[in-house]
Length: 563
Image (tube, rainbow, N blue to C red; front, side, top):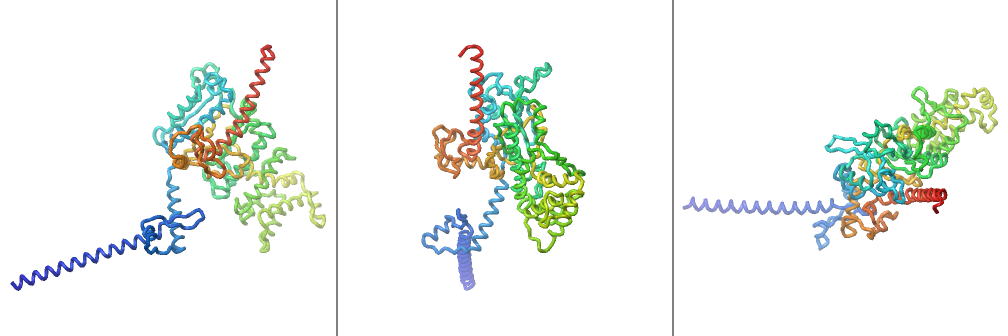
């Protein structure tokens, strides 16, 4: 009995111990959970528009609001959490799918401006030729690059469509990764197999096009970019190219209807759409392209062999480009051409051999401890030294020694030294054309408004008057456009397709999301560039075409007496 009683006491004591341990463990878990909740409350926050930290509405925050004591968020903890949040956002953005067949199909169905593109390339503002097999639109070549399976590209040429709706249906069906536009032929390109052998099939007209790509500037890009990689600093070279070409095409050739587009990745395209440009022969196109082309020299011979005196077009280009060269190429914020010793030593080394005394004098001066001149000041000083060296200007004391030296300088050397600043500016800033794109009517070029498959960005029109402000990294991507559509429809109470009476719900400061909405692209950031293209490019061209058609009709009526 004694042993049994002792055993029972032991069992009860053991049970009490286990119960106490379980209760203690439960209390520990509760304390740990409370600490975790408080820790989460500290870590979870978001930045407001002013850059400060606002606590999120977590359960812990709600408990604090109802009377619980909230742990204070220190600036150090807020800063660390902000850094973690920023890093997470950057990782999410980097991992975001910018291009997929599904996103592309949605873009073609809802955002691709079919009407803008087809009405432009029909050149028929009255619609008189619409739906006929002899219209310009029906005789236009379209090319699709499709990818039925990943990595398996199929290139389809010589497609043509009688009616714009046929093109829209084909794009919807094929979902092309790339669309290229070709020439207008004598007959619909889809019939080329039966016509080529007869010699009756050939090109009749095509826009005069230009293609400028940053990869052609790799030899002078000192920003760290090469190939497909671009940055804000080297993109300035595209800005310079647009300014030079725009003035030349309008002022020297009288073209009025010039449209510029971002290529979607690393370049720009120009489409000259005047009838006089569209009907140029291949020889005339080659001549126009050659007019803008200059030789950049070779590795053995860096000289450009510019004419002397300088051609007026090149003189004007130099006036346009030199200020941008000073602002965007010379300083450390650009390509550091005169910002670092190794850079300016290379630049001085490119002076003609006859100007070696100038190079030596400036190298000594700029290497001195007391020299704090800016890149812009160095460029002005270099030009001044060269001018004195060839006798075009003198020093403050009359520069008799320099004048005597200049008289003994051979004419050939004097011209080389005089043109060296122009050649240097042009080497870094002058447009580098893919001339083969411009020379032939039958050359294809990527369609505006399509998506670049590597970046997911839209080939948007560029507003030339604001080309300095154009940012290729701000061009919308497919995922961004999908989010904008969702946001618009959420704010407007849902609804998928557009209707003529819809109103945009406020939006951007520039008004790009205000006004009546007829197309889904007007619900997104595409509205600004697309509407500018419509109003500033298409409308003036249509007005001119209407005037020309009316004048032709009146002339015909006068000849036949049918007024």
